[in-house]
Image 1 (cartoon, rainbow, N blue to C red):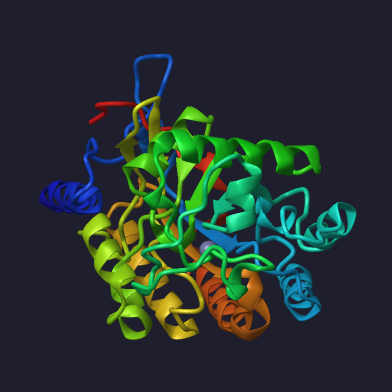
Image 2: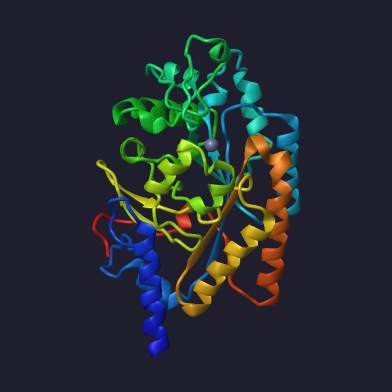
Length: 348
Ligand SMILES: [Zn+2]
């Protein structure tokens, strides 16, 4: 009994930590039409270790080596669903061939996968949406000259989209959703922000455009080594204060609706090697073993544009995670966003 209470207290602490500095209700209660919460349903069924494998499509390029790396991942782990945060920025490049872009993306996206949305501050994407481009300050504290040589083809990947107003961002979100839907990828219900910079204006814009799940909360400890001396690191540390490698889904308010925030608690492969991903799995497994009735989410991932370089790290971790789960008969399941009950405003 005492152990049970302690386990519940520890869960609560995790939830509170996860909320951190953002204005949000405490963790993970959800909509239910019978007056019982999904939490209670979960308790009756028994919990699972829910694995999310995510990929951010940066909108820069669709190179053969990176597409091959993703095809290899799908061949090697056919049972693992992938959450693709797709980017409409490929379609607004100067010489974009729409059919070719769609065909390339489709080489990596399967019917079992989720098609979400990712947005970076690409100049051409923002201009195509009717928004005046802003070029400063970038993640690195620099300024882009919108009329300069570096912007002739396209630029702005390193511009945090949180520089824009929510009204401006709504236009970009809408154009992105419309474009991806037109190309056969459905209308995204989930989102991860470029550079994890999902500040309030971004959250308001995506909620107003119908996004339900937000995936940008990140433990900045993973980013310290590569980004520790850059402005973006300070911004993210403030934005996602208290987010850890065991942070779990929680409700996050936006002006139009409440978003369900699913923390990127295992980060992305460019910053997190195989052993660190396995460590994140172990930390969440320990949370699960303290109270087997509750789900725990483990989120790991990579970027399309660096897949050839970093996917081997993620595959090593995946192999080990599945091997360990089988050996220990853990209820590991590959899931997409909709496996997480939707949060509601003010839920406890
Ligand atoms: Zn990105």
